[in-house]
Length: 473
Image (tube, rainbow, N blue to C red; front, side):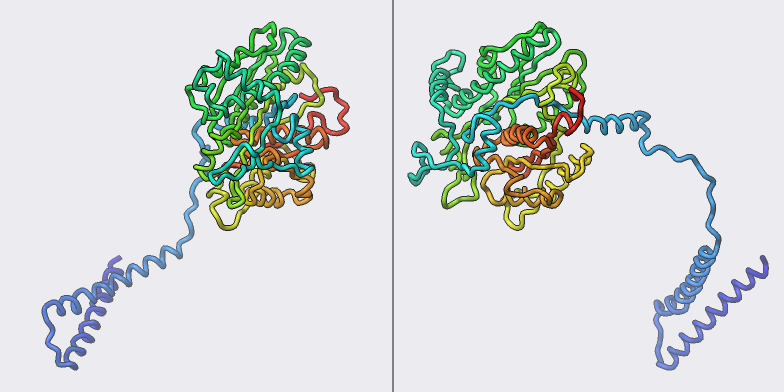
């Protein structure tokens, strides 16, 4: 220990003497008269800095030369201190695989009065035409997808005179036309429901969920609820249907409501649950056209990147797994949970249109469903004529489903029905279910009509091809 101290002191003194000798010789050779600050810096700080740097460097080298310290093994702590975290993760994974059974779909649009007719209109190249009764600010006819049915006009007139419709609603033609269209599909759905409930008395309960366009206003809900209650509904021994009226603002919100229904149907216990998911929209009256033009949404020969207004109604009859086990309807279509995402920028913002988000959603849905890519035989979307949306759709599915023919296997409903925002995705689902029955194979349903929101779900046969079982659960 004493020898180490002598070596440290000796080395330090030698360093200081060497530095002093060099500095003093330098000053003397230059005939330089140092100031007080230079004396402190060169004869005090500099030698100390050299000595300190040497010992720091030596200590660092000795530290690197030492063998690494081996710590005693300790039991790994869980990532989450919540003891239920593993259970929750397993529950979430199981919930992602939930499905609902689409028993039937009732639709009406300018392209047809059933999903099969809509698909046929798309294949035949039927497109919205100019309407002489609708004109833009320049006086030219407006392209619109109008349901041309004398019964619709008669129902609109009856609704305008009905006491069930409050005066504010009776003065809004877009609501009256939507109600007239919805009345027709609910009548068809009611007949089918009566057959099912009568065949299984006391075992099925019905929920009616009506999605309302948020543009109709919250004040319209009470009047519309009275109108809905006034319709003829089949009643089971379990009581009258439960009615829910839910305003929705966008395409993504509509499909999220569908996803919530699938989740609740699988979590329900007791009686078999039937859910009638309904909605209607119309934008083919002069007031709606004027609003679209003011908002710069209206298609015209000068603005072909804008939307064509349309109108339509739908009613989707969904069954819980318990209800399907009771009904044993082999023609039902399994509908998966919805994969939802949002683009980083609007599809019409300019620049290159990419389909990466759609490709990711498609891959996620197929992974959850446990299906190989080759099993999907078609993709049905809600896109319309706009080039950006169609490009995004085809690029998104092309990256994963390059075995499909874009013209034959990827129909876009909006090209024939016009824009049905916010219900284009559910119209596409109705058509996808018809495609599943026709092909007896899985079909993807895609919604990309919105500027940013994107959604994908999987529809597939209740029974795989060749399955001898009489029912699927």
